Picture 1: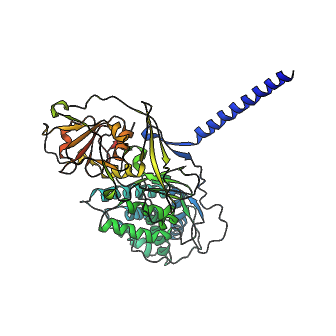
Picture 2: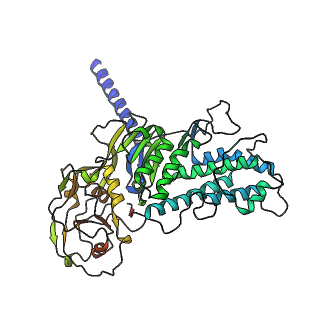
Picture 3: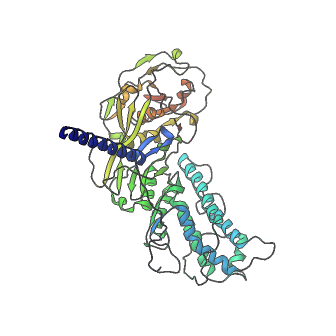
Amino acid sequence: MRIADLLISTVAVFIISMISRVAAAMVTAENVFRLAGLGSLIAGRHSQVDADAGERDTKPLKEAWGLRSGVYTPRQLVEGFAPLLDTVVFHLGIDPTGSKPARTRLLDNVAANLATDSRESTLRLVEPLDISRREMKDQANRIGKTLVQWARESSPNSFDPEMYLRSPCEGHLLLPSNVDLMFGDRAAPHLMQLFNEYMHQMVLLRDALLPFQNYQDVLIPVDRQARGIRHLESARSQFLAELLTKHTTQKGIIAYAKALLAPGLLHNGAAGYGFQYAHGTVLPAFLAGGPTPLHLLQYLPTKIDESVTEVLFEYKFQDYYSAPRGQIPKGSPTSASLLQIYPETKSTSVESAAIGMSNVLKVNSSQLLKLQLELSNGKCISVDLGQIARGHRYSYLIQNAPDKNITKFTQDYVVHDPLSILQSENGGLLTVQEGGVHVFPVEDPLIALALLGKLYPENVVLLPADETLCRAETAGKGFEPKFVVWGGSKRGGLKGVFEK
């Protein structure tokens, strides 16, 4: 009986242990955060954050209007600004019969302030524009329309008849038709102060969201540093000065995003390309897949480094120009006549992909990330994620190349196996000293992106698989070596379309 009891006990312990492991595995699987656009790319664990919109802050406001400390979605911020507008509308009284409602007219004014091509624009961007400014113009228009739509949809019942505050003039213009509304018989002297503050808060929010492709999802921490989100004014001025006098840079985009979400990381000596903060993670938006942007970032409700609250993600090579360079593995010289169409390849697909932390230790609240790929041939590779982001940003598209009606090849090429490049143990960036045009046939978009992280990013061309190789002759720079990643991407977006 003792032996039987022992066997039963052992079996019971084993079963309980197995159930616990399965349960733990199920919880782990449920907590994994995946980016669906690139083959369910894993990016840490899902982070549940409550956007409380300041509900836990019960202390009295120091002024007639302000935002309570808490975590806000952009829409909640628009709702938090609403008392400024609603109080103005309340004091303007009943609208004359047959006239457009005052609230509609004032929101039309905000729409004009947030447009990029109106007399009342607070960020005026008109063609001709370079690619970085064009991206910011389109982004500003998308965000502005969304903010005004949210404001129109909110219920106008948050007014405070006793609200008075002094709002410094910010130079935001009224529509000509609204001048009489705000300064005529229906108005009172303090109403323009309230509406000026409302306009300015909406402008600050629109500009603060410019770095983010999925701007509507960003979780924004707010405390009582200043009225509303006026604490962003200095960072906004610096960002717009660069945008309007030079062009948008990735460094500037990251700095502006940190000012909004993780100001503590602004003191880090490195610029970085993304970061983790208390309420999520921010990475380059091309990782979300689909039509990719140039500089925009993606907010992710995830934590990649669970050991810390805030961490900056750095490039492996701060200056790619001075990074070590190695020779790419030898390829196969191929006659142009044999490359009339996309070549048959031994298809190697990606079985799983994840963003993970590198083993290289960094200081000053910084970390290196890597893209880890498990391939269908059983091999695993990892590439620095920062260099992939840089390589993607610096790549050239054939859709932007001069059209010289090239229909015949004018030179021969060297064809390489992409996996030989990805498995190279050289610690630097790969190039060739002899020049030439080097072609990498790729099918999987994740492998194409990984290649961009291994090649020296000076003259790399993205060529869709359904395009002829001669289309790459006018793309990129007019010297050699030239690297052509043939396949893995499609036409579209500002920097190609990557999707599975």
